Every structure is written in structure tokens, then in C-alpha cells.
Length: 285
Image 1 (cartoon, rainbow, N blue to C red):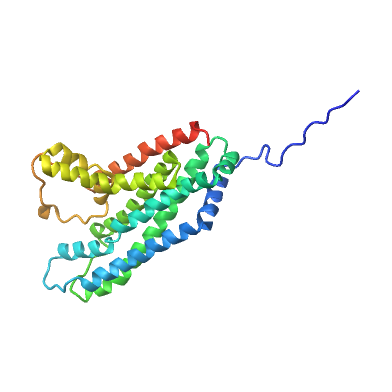
Image 2 (cartoon, rainbow, N blue to C red):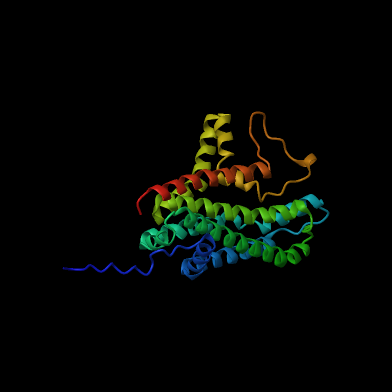
């Protein structure tokens, strides 16, 4: 008569991380990867650097309106966003595509068999970290450039909502671009492909639409370009002058305000976020 001995349970059997544990895990992974430090360091460096460069080269002005002063100041403090969005996009893709490339995603999904909790934990950690870094870099830029601009006759009213909101909007824009890129990384599961796809959407598509709109003089193409992520999101960190001084767009041309631009960009993130979540849930690793 023979007896069988039940197999000993494996060390990880029955061990599952809750969402808070996944968030802590993703935070450890994010800050321990060298590319993360390089990307965030470059965002801070470029934000401050472009602000100082703008302040040093802007012409001295005298007897200009408060609206113009605020506009010039906001332009200098958010000038870098057009460049740092590229870094935020690259980082957003690498956050998830890097794990697919190394195979570490298997361990992540072992700890979170449902997969979606890990997917959203990654997105949350990326969003919060990018927002904090962006806010700090823009705030430091505002503090170091304000005295330089003041010496040239440009005194920005940093406490006014018309100035403060665009500065905050710059951080929000970078955050949403990073999360949008993250969804592309989840969909493509390849670093090079994800980066090329998101940068194509953010940089190439708006230019192509504007060229075709100018050549064909078709208003619908021009209006379509206004709803691309970069054009719509650009409204978030643009200074809006007094209503009486705003230039009215030509008849038939759509012009989004900051709130509408924010909602359009959020819609892009939500749509691709849903697609990324569905594919993450249903595909094999």
C-alpha cells in the first residue's frame, strides 16, 4: 500500500496585494528605476532653464498694461512645457512597457491576478509623482524669474487667478500627457512603438491637420485640429486676457477655452485608458 503526500504550498500561494500595497509597490519601482530620475531631473532642469533664458532675453518694457505684463510672465514660466511634454510622454510609456520588455510584468500580475488594480496603481503613482514634480519645477521657475522680469518692467501678479491657473495648468497638462502615454504603453506593450505612437498623436497629427486645413481651406479640418491633445491641452496653460481684449476667431472656427481644453484632454486619457485596461485584462502577458 502506498501513500501520497500532498504537495507543499508554494510560498506565494494565497498572497495577494491590496490596492494600497500595489501603490506602495509601484512607488518603489518607479523611484528605483534610473530612467525615472533622469526624466524628472530633466523636467526640473529644463523648466527652470527655459524660464531663466526667457527672462534674460526678453526686452525691457515700460508703461505696458498689466494684462501684457501677466501674459509675458506666464509665457516665460510655462515656455518649457512644450519641450518637457516629450519627456513626460517618454516616461509614461516606459513605466509599463519596461516591465513587458523585461518580463517583470508577470510578477506584477501574479501579485494582482485581476491585473486592473496593478494597471490603475501604476497610473496613479505616475500621475501624482509627475504632478508634484511639475508643480515644484514651475513654482521654482516663477520664484527665480519674477525678480528678473520685475527689473525689466514686467511685474506679474502671481496671486491672481488669471496667472496662477495657467501655471497650475502647465503641471496638469504634463500629468495628463504622461498618463496618456502610459495608456499607449499598455496598448502597444513596446517602448519604441509606444513612444512613437504617442508622440505622433501629440506632435505630428496636429501639424498635419493644420497643413491640410490651410491647403484645403476646410473649416472642419481646422476645427478637428483644435481637439487634438496638444492643441486642446495647450489652452490649459495659456494666459487668457480680459474678455474685452480677446481676439474673436473667424466665423466657423472652433476656439476652446481652458475648461473645454481640459475636458477634451481628459476625454483622450479616459478613452485610451479604457482601451488599455481592456487589453491588459484580456490579453496574455
